[in-house]
Length: 430
Image 1 (spheres, rainbow, N blue to C red):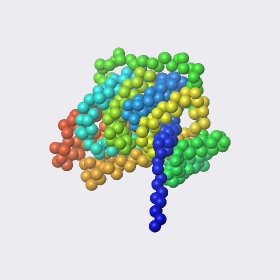
Image 2 (tube, helix red, strand yellow):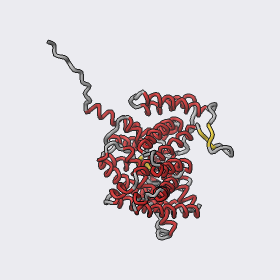
Image 3 (cartoon, helix red, strand yellow):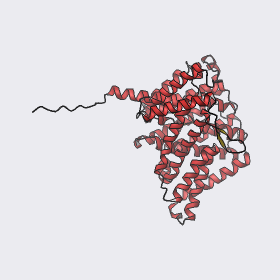
Image 4 (cartoon, rainbow, N blue to C red):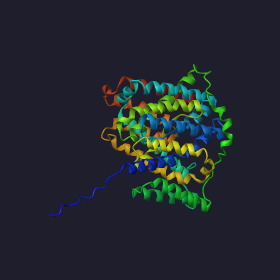
Protein backbone atom coordinates (compact mmCIF):
# COMPACT_ATOMS: atom_id res chain seq x y z
CA UNK A 1 0.00 0.00 0.00
CA UNK A 2 1.36 3.36 -0.99
CA UNK A 3 1.78 5.91 1.75
CA UNK A 4 -0.36 8.97 1.13
CA UNK A 5 1.59 12.22 0.94
CA UNK A 6 -0.02 15.13 2.72
CA UNK A 7 0.89 18.50 1.30
CA UNK A 8 1.45 21.09 3.99
CA UNK A 9 1.80 24.80 3.39
CA UNK A 10 4.37 25.78 5.95
CA UNK A 11 4.78 29.43 6.84
CA UNK A 12 8.47 30.16 7.18
CA UNK A 13 9.97 32.95 9.33
CA UNK A 14 10.88 34.76 6.10
CA UNK A 15 7.24 34.62 4.97
CA UNK A 16 6.15 36.05 8.32
CA UNK A 17 8.75 38.82 8.09
CA UNK A 18 7.58 39.73 4.58
CA UNK A 19 3.99 39.86 5.80
CA UNK A 20 4.90 42.10 8.74
CA UNK A 21 6.99 44.49 6.60
CA UNK A 22 4.27 44.66 3.94
CA UNK A 23 1.71 45.37 6.66
CA UNK A 24 3.96 48.10 8.05
CA UNK A 25 4.27 49.69 4.62
CA UNK A 26 0.50 49.50 4.23
CA UNK A 27 -0.08 51.27 7.54
CA UNK A 28 2.57 53.86 6.70
CA UNK A 29 1.11 54.72 3.31
CA UNK A 30 -2.39 54.78 4.78
CA UNK A 31 -1.36 57.38 7.39
CA UNK A 32 1.27 59.19 5.30
CA UNK A 33 -1.20 61.98 4.56
CA UNK A 34 -0.74 63.12 8.17
CA UNK A 35 2.62 64.62 7.20
CA UNK A 36 0.72 67.06 4.99
CA UNK A 37 -2.62 67.44 6.76
CA UNK A 38 -1.32 67.93 10.31
CA UNK A 39 0.97 70.88 9.47
CA UNK A 40 -1.88 72.47 7.48
CA UNK A 41 -4.25 72.22 10.45
CA UNK A 42 -1.63 73.48 12.90
CA UNK A 43 -0.94 76.43 10.62
CA UNK A 44 -4.33 77.78 11.68
CA UNK A 45 -3.03 77.70 15.24
CA UNK A 46 -0.01 79.78 14.24
CA UNK A 47 2.61 77.03 13.96
CA UNK A 48 4.66 77.38 10.74
CA UNK A 49 3.85 74.47 8.41
CA UNK A 50 7.40 74.15 7.08
CA UNK A 51 8.61 73.46 10.64
CA UNK A 52 5.54 71.58 11.84
CA UNK A 53 6.14 68.90 9.23
CA UNK A 54 9.43 68.06 10.99
CA UNK A 55 7.66 67.86 14.35
CA UNK A 56 5.00 65.59 12.84
CA UNK A 57 7.61 63.23 11.39
CA UNK A 58 9.85 63.17 14.49
CA UNK A 59 6.88 62.53 16.81
CA UNK A 60 5.70 59.70 14.54
CA UNK A 61 9.16 58.10 14.35
CA UNK A 62 9.66 58.22 18.11
CA UNK A 63 6.16 56.94 18.86
CA UNK A 64 6.46 54.05 16.41
CA UNK A 65 9.91 53.07 17.71
CA UNK A 66 8.60 52.99 21.28
CA UNK A 67 5.63 50.91 20.15
CA UNK A 68 7.91 48.46 18.32
CA UNK A 69 10.42 48.06 21.15
CA UNK A 70 8.32 48.30 24.31
CA UNK A 71 4.87 47.04 23.30
CA UNK A 72 5.82 44.98 20.22
CA UNK A 73 2.40 45.81 18.82
CA UNK A 74 1.36 46.53 15.19
CA UNK A 75 0.21 50.05 16.04
CA UNK A 76 1.36 53.25 14.36
CA UNK A 77 1.48 56.38 16.52
CA UNK A 78 1.16 59.76 14.81
CA UNK A 79 -0.31 63.19 15.65
CA UNK A 80 -3.99 62.33 15.57
CA UNK A 81 -6.74 63.59 13.35
CA UNK A 82 -9.47 64.95 15.60
CA UNK A 83 -7.02 65.74 18.38
CA UNK A 84 -5.19 68.18 16.12
CA UNK A 85 -8.54 69.77 15.25
CA UNK A 86 -9.29 70.09 18.97
CA UNK A 87 -5.82 71.59 19.49
CA UNK A 88 -6.29 74.19 16.75
CA UNK A 89 -9.99 74.98 16.48
CA UNK A 90 -11.08 74.51 20.09
CA UNK A 91 -8.06 75.57 22.14
CA UNK A 92 -6.54 78.25 19.91
CA UNK A 93 -9.36 79.53 17.71
CA UNK A 94 -12.31 78.86 20.03
CA UNK A 95 -10.80 79.49 23.46
CA UNK A 96 -8.42 82.19 22.16
CA UNK A 97 -5.26 80.61 23.55
CA UNK A 98 -1.97 80.88 21.67
CA UNK A 99 -0.27 77.80 20.27
CA UNK A 100 2.36 77.76 23.01
CA UNK A 101 -0.39 77.61 25.66
CA UNK A 102 -2.05 74.83 23.67
CA UNK A 103 1.26 72.94 23.68
CA UNK A 104 1.40 73.39 27.47
CA UNK A 105 -2.13 71.97 27.77
CA UNK A 106 -1.06 69.02 25.64
CA UNK A 107 1.96 68.38 27.88
CA UNK A 108 -0.10 68.63 31.09
CA UNK A 109 -2.72 66.26 29.66
CA UNK A 110 -0.03 63.79 28.65
CA UNK A 111 1.44 63.80 32.17
CA UNK A 112 -1.97 62.89 33.60
CA UNK A 113 -2.33 60.28 30.86
CA UNK A 114 1.03 58.76 31.87
CA UNK A 115 -0.07 58.66 35.53
CA UNK A 116 -3.16 56.73 34.48
CA UNK A 117 -1.35 54.38 32.10
CA UNK A 118 1.42 53.37 34.52
CA UNK A 119 -0.76 52.92 37.61
CA UNK A 120 -3.76 50.75 38.55
CA UNK A 121 -5.94 53.66 37.38
CA UNK A 122 -5.82 52.22 33.87
CA UNK A 123 -7.22 48.90 35.13
CA UNK A 124 -9.83 50.81 37.14
CA UNK A 125 -10.96 52.72 34.05
CA UNK A 126 -10.96 49.55 31.96
CA UNK A 127 -13.25 47.90 34.48
CA UNK A 128 -15.42 50.95 35.20
CA UNK A 129 -16.08 52.44 31.77
CA UNK A 130 -18.91 50.44 30.15
CA UNK A 131 -17.88 48.42 27.12
CA UNK A 132 -20.69 49.95 25.09
CA UNK A 133 -19.12 53.41 25.44
CA UNK A 134 -15.74 52.08 24.33
CA UNK A 135 -17.39 50.43 21.33
CA UNK A 136 -19.13 53.70 20.52
CA UNK A 137 -15.83 55.59 20.63
CA UNK A 138 -14.18 53.22 18.16
CA UNK A 139 -17.21 53.17 15.85
CA UNK A 140 -17.60 56.94 16.08
CA UNK A 141 -13.98 57.57 15.16
CA UNK A 142 -14.40 55.05 12.35
CA UNK A 143 -17.40 56.95 11.00
CA UNK A 144 -15.43 60.18 11.40
CA UNK A 145 -12.67 58.60 9.32
CA UNK A 146 -15.20 57.59 6.68
CA UNK A 147 -16.54 61.14 6.58
CA UNK A 148 -13.04 62.58 6.20
CA UNK A 149 -12.30 60.09 3.44
CA UNK A 150 -15.48 60.95 1.57
CA UNK A 151 -14.67 64.65 1.88
CA UNK A 152 -11.10 64.17 0.65
CA UNK A 153 -12.46 62.18 -2.29
CA UNK A 154 -14.95 64.94 -3.11
CA UNK A 155 -17.77 62.40 -2.88
CA UNK A 156 -19.56 64.55 -0.31
CA UNK A 157 -19.53 68.30 0.14
CA UNK A 158 -21.43 70.98 2.00
CA UNK A 159 -25.11 70.88 1.15
CA UNK A 160 -25.58 74.61 1.64
CA UNK A 161 -28.94 75.75 2.98
CA UNK A 162 -30.93 72.75 1.76
CA UNK A 163 -29.01 69.92 3.39
CA UNK A 164 -26.11 69.25 5.69
CA UNK A 165 -24.22 67.33 3.01
CA UNK A 166 -24.59 66.80 -0.72
CA UNK A 167 -23.05 64.41 -3.22
CA UNK A 168 -20.09 65.65 -5.22
CA UNK A 169 -20.32 65.89 -8.99
CA UNK A 170 -19.14 62.72 -10.73
CA UNK A 171 -18.24 64.94 -13.69
CA UNK A 172 -15.46 66.45 -11.58
CA UNK A 173 -12.22 64.70 -12.67
CA UNK A 174 -11.01 64.34 -9.06
CA UNK A 175 -14.30 62.79 -7.96
CA UNK A 176 -14.21 60.40 -10.92
CA UNK A 177 -10.64 59.44 -10.02
CA UNK A 178 -11.69 58.92 -6.40
CA UNK A 179 -14.46 56.54 -7.52
CA UNK A 180 -11.96 54.64 -9.63
CA UNK A 181 -9.56 54.50 -6.68
CA UNK A 182 -12.29 53.32 -4.30
CA UNK A 183 -13.43 50.59 -6.70
CA UNK A 184 -9.86 49.44 -7.35
CA UNK A 185 -8.88 49.39 -3.67
CA UNK A 186 -12.13 47.76 -2.58
CA UNK A 187 -11.85 45.07 -5.25
CA UNK A 188 -8.28 44.28 -4.22
CA UNK A 189 -9.25 44.28 -0.54
CA UNK A 190 -12.19 41.93 -1.02
CA UNK A 191 -10.04 39.63 -3.14
CA UNK A 192 -7.63 39.54 -0.18
CA UNK A 193 -4.79 40.67 -2.42
CA UNK A 194 -1.54 41.09 -0.48
CA UNK A 195 -0.78 44.80 -0.15
CA UNK A 196 -4.17 45.79 -1.56
CA UNK A 197 -4.07 49.26 -0.01
CA UNK A 198 -0.53 49.96 -1.24
CA UNK A 199 -1.41 48.85 -4.76
CA UNK A 200 -4.50 51.06 -4.70
CA UNK A 201 -2.54 54.11 -3.50
CA UNK A 202 0.33 53.67 -5.96
CA UNK A 203 -1.95 52.83 -8.87
CA UNK A 204 -4.16 55.85 -8.27
CA UNK A 205 -1.15 58.14 -7.80
CA UNK A 206 0.29 57.01 -11.15
CA UNK A 207 -3.00 57.60 -12.93
CA UNK A 208 -3.38 60.98 -11.22
CA UNK A 209 0.14 61.99 -12.25
CA UNK A 210 -0.27 61.15 -15.92
CA UNK A 211 -3.76 62.65 -16.13
CA UNK A 212 -2.62 65.65 -14.09
CA UNK A 213 -5.48 65.22 -11.61
CA UNK A 214 -5.27 65.83 -7.88
CA UNK A 215 -4.26 68.52 -5.46
CA UNK A 216 -0.61 69.12 -4.73
CA UNK A 217 0.73 69.91 -1.31
CA UNK A 218 1.44 73.46 -0.24
CA UNK A 219 4.02 72.23 2.30
CA UNK A 220 7.36 73.31 0.87
CA UNK A 221 9.61 71.96 3.63
CA UNK A 222 13.02 70.53 2.86
CA UNK A 223 15.96 69.32 4.91
CA UNK A 224 17.66 72.67 4.47
CA UNK A 225 15.12 74.17 6.88
CA UNK A 226 15.88 71.66 9.63
CA UNK A 227 18.19 74.15 11.34
CA UNK A 228 15.16 76.36 12.11
CA UNK A 229 13.24 73.54 13.77
CA UNK A 230 14.61 74.43 17.22
CA UNK A 231 12.00 77.22 17.28
CA UNK A 232 9.35 74.57 18.06
CA UNK A 233 11.23 72.60 20.71
CA UNK A 234 10.04 72.89 24.35
CA UNK A 235 7.78 75.89 23.64
CA UNK A 236 4.98 75.16 26.13
CA UNK A 237 3.69 78.28 27.91
CA UNK A 238 2.45 77.36 31.41
CA UNK A 239 1.87 80.95 32.60
CA UNK A 240 -1.93 80.42 32.61
CA UNK A 241 -1.66 76.98 34.19
CA UNK A 242 -3.90 77.70 37.21
CA UNK A 243 -6.73 79.48 35.39
CA UNK A 244 -10.13 77.73 35.08
CA UNK A 245 -9.97 77.90 31.28
CA UNK A 246 -6.58 76.20 31.19
CA UNK A 247 -7.57 73.47 33.66
CA UNK A 248 -10.83 72.65 31.87
CA UNK A 249 -8.94 72.49 28.59
CA UNK A 250 -6.50 70.02 30.22
CA UNK A 251 -9.46 67.91 31.39
CA UNK A 252 -11.03 67.86 27.92
CA UNK A 253 -7.83 66.88 26.17
CA UNK A 254 -7.04 64.24 28.81
CA UNK A 255 -10.45 62.64 28.30
CA UNK A 256 -9.92 62.58 24.55
CA UNK A 257 -6.43 61.09 24.80
CA UNK A 258 -7.28 58.45 27.40
CA UNK A 259 -10.62 57.21 26.09
CA UNK A 260 -9.84 57.56 22.39
CA UNK A 261 -6.62 55.59 22.85
CA UNK A 262 -8.35 53.04 25.03
CA UNK A 263 -11.14 52.58 22.51
CA UNK A 264 -8.88 52.41 19.44
CA UNK A 265 -6.34 50.06 21.02
CA UNK A 266 -9.06 47.73 22.27
CA UNK A 267 -10.63 47.76 18.84
CA UNK A 268 -7.42 47.19 16.90
CA UNK A 269 -5.32 44.82 18.99
CA UNK A 270 -6.14 41.18 18.40
CA UNK A 271 -3.75 40.15 21.20
CA UNK A 272 -5.20 41.51 24.46
CA UNK A 273 -1.92 40.91 26.30
CA UNK A 274 -0.32 43.76 24.34
CA UNK A 275 -2.90 46.36 25.40
CA UNK A 276 -1.24 47.45 28.66
CA UNK A 277 2.15 48.26 27.17
CA UNK A 278 0.65 49.77 24.03
CA UNK A 279 -1.45 52.04 26.24
CA UNK A 280 1.66 53.04 28.20
CA UNK A 281 3.64 53.74 25.03
CA UNK A 282 0.79 55.87 23.72
CA UNK A 283 0.89 57.98 26.89
CA UNK A 284 4.66 58.52 26.70
CA UNK A 285 4.41 59.42 23.03
CA UNK A 286 1.91 62.21 23.74
CA UNK A 287 4.40 63.82 26.12
CA UNK A 288 7.22 63.66 23.59
CA UNK A 289 5.02 65.10 20.84
CA UNK A 290 4.26 68.15 22.98
CA UNK A 291 7.96 68.70 23.66
CA UNK A 292 8.65 68.33 19.93
CA UNK A 293 6.15 71.06 19.08
CA UNK A 294 3.10 69.29 17.65
CA UNK A 295 -0.36 68.19 18.72
CA UNK A 296 -0.61 64.88 20.63
CA UNK A 297 0.07 61.55 18.99
CA UNK A 298 -2.55 58.83 19.16
CA UNK A 299 -2.87 55.27 17.95
CA UNK A 300 -3.71 55.80 14.30
CA UNK A 301 -6.97 54.24 13.20
CA UNK A 302 -5.19 53.53 9.92
CA UNK A 303 -3.19 50.89 11.80
CA UNK A 304 -6.17 48.67 10.99
CA UNK A 305 -4.99 48.71 7.37
CA UNK A 306 -1.74 46.99 8.33
CA UNK A 307 -3.48 44.61 10.71
CA UNK A 308 -5.93 43.65 7.97
CA UNK A 309 -2.87 42.93 5.79
CA UNK A 310 -1.61 40.41 8.36
CA UNK A 311 0.49 42.56 10.71
CA UNK A 312 0.69 41.19 14.25
CA UNK A 313 4.00 42.37 15.76
CA UNK A 314 6.11 45.43 16.42
CA UNK A 315 7.79 44.99 13.03
CA UNK A 316 4.77 46.85 11.62
CA UNK A 317 5.51 49.87 13.82
CA UNK A 318 9.26 49.60 13.11
CA UNK A 319 8.61 49.58 9.36
CA UNK A 320 6.34 52.61 9.70
CA UNK A 321 9.05 54.41 11.70
CA UNK A 322 11.50 53.69 8.89
CA UNK A 323 9.02 55.04 6.36
CA UNK A 324 8.60 58.28 8.32
CA UNK A 325 12.39 58.63 8.64
CA UNK A 326 12.94 58.17 4.91
CA UNK A 327 10.21 60.73 4.26
CA UNK A 328 12.60 63.40 5.50
CA UNK A 329 14.64 62.81 2.35
CA UNK A 330 11.66 62.32 0.06
CA UNK A 331 9.36 65.15 1.12
CA UNK A 332 9.06 66.45 -2.41
CA UNK A 333 7.56 63.12 -3.54
CA UNK A 334 4.58 63.51 -1.20
CA UNK A 335 3.03 65.92 -3.68
CA UNK A 336 2.54 63.04 -6.11
CA UNK A 337 0.20 61.22 -3.72
CA UNK A 338 -3.14 63.02 -4.09
CA UNK A 339 -5.81 62.97 -1.42
CA UNK A 340 -8.08 60.89 -3.66
CA UNK A 341 -5.50 58.08 -3.48
CA UNK A 342 -5.58 58.07 0.32
CA UNK A 343 -9.34 58.55 0.66
CA UNK A 344 -10.39 54.94 -0.17
CA UNK A 345 -8.06 53.56 2.50
CA UNK A 346 -9.63 55.92 5.06
CA UNK A 347 -13.14 54.92 3.98
CA UNK A 348 -12.49 51.18 4.11
CA UNK A 349 -10.51 51.40 7.36
CA UNK A 350 -13.28 53.47 8.96
CA UNK A 351 -15.83 50.89 7.87
CA UNK A 352 -13.73 48.16 9.47
CA UNK A 353 -13.66 50.10 12.75
CA UNK A 354 -17.45 50.33 12.69
CA UNK A 355 -17.58 46.56 13.11
CA UNK A 356 -17.40 47.42 16.83
CA UNK A 357 -21.16 48.01 16.60
CA UNK A 358 -21.61 44.24 16.39
CA UNK A 359 -20.52 44.09 20.05
CA UNK A 360 -23.21 46.53 21.22
CA UNK A 361 -26.33 45.06 22.87
CA UNK A 362 -29.09 46.51 20.70
CA UNK A 363 -31.70 44.68 22.76
CA UNK A 364 -31.03 47.13 25.63
CA UNK A 365 -31.85 50.71 24.64
CA UNK A 366 -30.07 52.10 27.71
CA UNK A 367 -26.92 50.32 26.54
CA UNK A 368 -26.79 51.33 22.91
CA UNK A 369 -28.30 54.84 22.96
CA UNK A 370 -25.26 56.49 24.64
CA UNK A 371 -23.02 54.58 22.22
CA UNK A 372 -25.21 55.79 19.37
CA UNK A 373 -24.82 59.42 20.48
CA UNK A 374 -21.04 59.10 20.54
CA UNK A 375 -21.00 57.47 17.13
CA UNK A 376 -23.13 60.07 15.33
CA UNK A 377 -22.02 63.24 17.11
CA UNK A 378 -18.29 62.74 16.53
CA UNK A 379 -18.58 62.98 12.72
CA UNK A 380 -21.56 65.37 12.71
CA UNK A 381 -19.81 67.90 14.96
CA UNK A 382 -16.29 67.10 13.78
CA UNK A 383 -15.35 66.95 17.45
CA UNK A 384 -14.35 63.79 19.30
CA UNK A 385 -14.67 65.57 22.65
CA UNK A 386 -18.28 66.59 21.94
CA UNK A 387 -19.24 63.04 21.00
CA UNK A 388 -17.59 61.70 24.15
CA UNK A 389 -19.31 64.31 26.30
CA UNK A 390 -22.84 63.52 25.13
CA UNK A 391 -22.30 59.78 25.36
CA UNK A 392 -20.83 59.87 28.87
CA UNK A 393 -23.57 62.25 30.07
CA UNK A 394 -26.36 60.18 28.52
CA UNK A 395 -25.23 56.85 29.99
CA UNK A 396 -26.06 57.52 33.68
CA UNK A 397 -29.17 59.50 32.70
CA UNK A 398 -30.78 56.67 30.73
CA UNK A 399 -29.78 54.09 33.33
CA UNK A 400 -31.36 56.12 36.13
CA UNK A 401 -34.47 56.75 34.03
CA UNK A 402 -34.81 53.01 33.46
CA UNK A 403 -34.46 52.28 37.18
CA UNK A 404 -30.98 50.78 36.78
CA UNK A 405 -28.99 53.26 38.84
CA UNK A 406 -27.23 50.45 40.71
CA UNK A 407 -25.61 49.41 37.43
CA UNK A 408 -23.83 52.76 37.21
CA UNK A 409 -20.53 53.17 39.04
CA UNK A 410 -20.26 56.36 41.11
CA UNK A 411 -17.25 57.40 39.04
CA UNK A 412 -19.46 57.65 35.94
CA UNK A 413 -21.63 60.28 37.65
CA UNK A 414 -18.49 62.29 38.36
CA UNK A 415 -17.37 61.98 34.76
CA UNK A 416 -20.80 63.01 33.52
CA UNK A 417 -20.68 66.13 35.70
CA UNK A 418 -17.22 67.02 34.41
CA UNK A 419 -18.35 66.59 30.80
CA UNK A 420 -21.33 68.87 31.47
CA UNK A 421 -18.89 71.48 32.76
CA UNK A 422 -16.78 70.99 29.65
CA UNK A 423 -19.72 71.60 27.32
CA UNK A 424 -20.72 74.72 29.24
CA UNK A 425 -17.21 76.15 29.25
CA UNK A 426 -16.74 75.33 25.55
CA UNK A 427 -19.97 77.18 24.77
CA UNK A 428 -18.82 80.20 26.75
CA UNK A 429 -15.47 80.44 25.00
CA UNK A 430 -16.70 79.69 21.48
